[in-house]
Length: 67
Image (cartoon, rainbow, N blue to C red):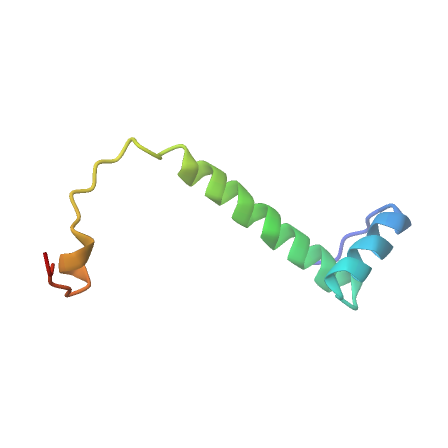
């Protein structure tokens, strides 16, 4: 999809230097993917402490308690 954007050049230059990404297209794609990932993580954090999972990780991992 082609889109025309008016982006501040100093932000693009700084982001490209920090990330070592060579193209503006890849920089924008990476930024969008990162923003989506952060938003999804934020949504998951809302469930912290609200879901009771009765899971014994030792059983799942096939470990036996030595004590």
